Every structure is written in C-alpha cells, then in structure tokens.
Image 1 (tube, helix red, strand yellow):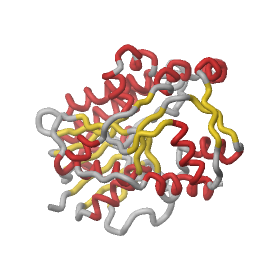
Image 2 (tube, one colour):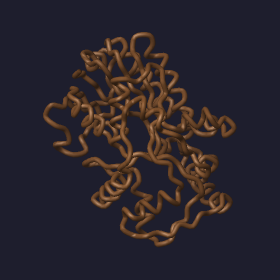
Image 3 (cartoon, helix red, strand yellow):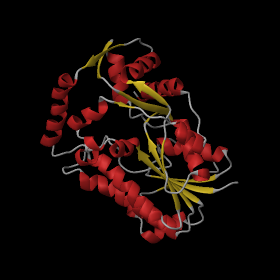
Length: 325
C-alpha cells in the first residue's frame, strides 16, 4: 500500500538512499534537508524536496510540513566526528536529543502514525558493556542513549516509533564526499598500514535503506533493532578496502600502548583549541580494540532487509573519494 513518508535528513547519504528504496515500493516521499542540494537533479520529479532548517522554523510551520504524512524518519543530527566548543554535551544534547524529541512530539500532534529514528550501535554497546561507562566518557554516545528514550516518550501513545541502531555504513551518493575519505587517503599513501586490533560490523547503505522501509511497514513499536551485515576484524576490513583502492596492503597491528601517544595528542589539540570531541579519543580505544560484533539475523528477519554487496559498496566509497579530489 502506498504511503506518504517524510524523511528529515532526506538529502543526506542515508536519507537519499532511503528515498530511492521507498519510492521503488510505490511510496510518496518528502525529503527535508539543509540547503543547498549537494547536486542538481539529485531527486526524481515525484520527490517533494524541502530545503530548510527545522530548528529555525516555528512549531506551527513544522506542523504544516508534517501534516498529511503517514510516517516520518529522523535521519538528522550531529555525528560522532564533530568536535564542538567545550563542553561538548550541550551541543550534542541540542542536536540529537532536543531536536529529535521536538520532531516526534510535533509529528504525533500532526497525526503521523509511524516513525523511525536512526540511532547508533554505540547505544547498544553502552547497554551491553556497562563496565566501559561509554555514556559517561563520550558525549555523543550519551546523546544517543538519551535521544532514544526521549523520542520513545515523545511518540507515545499515538505514534508507533521504531529505532534502528546502525554500524559502519559504506556506499556513495552524488554530490557528497564519504566520511571515509581520510582513511582512504591514508590507505592510498602507504604500502604498510598501522592499525589497532579489534573489529566491528559493516553494511552496504542500500540495506540500511531497506531496513528503514521495513521498519515503517512492519517494525514493532518501541523496539530497538540492531542493523548490520558482516563482522570483520580491522585487518580484514583494511585488506578488502585495499583491494577496492587497487593496492594490496600489509597491516601491522599495534598494541594499545603504541597508539595512546597519538590519541593523547588529539585530545590535547582539542583542549588547546577550546574544543571537545563527541568521542573521547583515549577512552574510545577500549571500544575500538575489542570485536564489536553482533548477529544481524534477528533484525534482518524482522524487517526484511538484504545482505551482501559490501565489496561493491567499498568500491563505490573509494571511487566517490577519488572523484571528490
């Protein structure tokens, strides 16, 4: 059945792919994002595109934008790479917690029935690894945990909200430079790579888009779904990314003590600049050097998204970085 879906962050990487998947299933999509469009002709003619900052709009203006939609997706906010002015917490609280909370309060008031919040798998690991105290040490992770609860509360009782917790995502879209560009430049510059031990879960962006569509259609209200595909060690990941770059790479795994001086340097630089990262670089090493693996099969069965295609997504990521140069 065709539905009307509004995606906040619809002009971004994940939002653009979600728009394409939803439209391929016969849905009508409104893509809302910050101006300007990354590239002319980015969307098909049937896509309603609104370029605006919702934080600059009044409640009544946002309500007018939301009315008439069956479902909404929150694919916006600040990611973990941002290093705002110290202290970082007020920035991440405003960008991730308060903005998303307001969005779903207004969506419920506008009569929207279904919602999807795109969150981070860091929230999952904060819950299952309490000894790491991730929310205490990392303002970004704290914001994701508080965002999830605030949005669930904001949506009740009339809007059925589903949360997707996302891992490392690869792929490309027209007009935007992948966030992986610094890593790919490093990969292309040297035959010998230095990296930490550990590993994590990774997925091609089209399957994230499929999960969003599945969550709108059949996600259980209040459920947190851990979305993912392949579990790879960092050595395995860098080898496959090296193949996408076109160069075979040797990876030297460094012990934690060898990495710490560089991380202290990053933290010191932020402090001298009056900044604070969303992730504390020193404390992040604890999470970076374990295998943050998980089984994506339960969420795949529940939401009906696909798997595979990671090597193609890595190649697309590399090509997009090359074109951006």
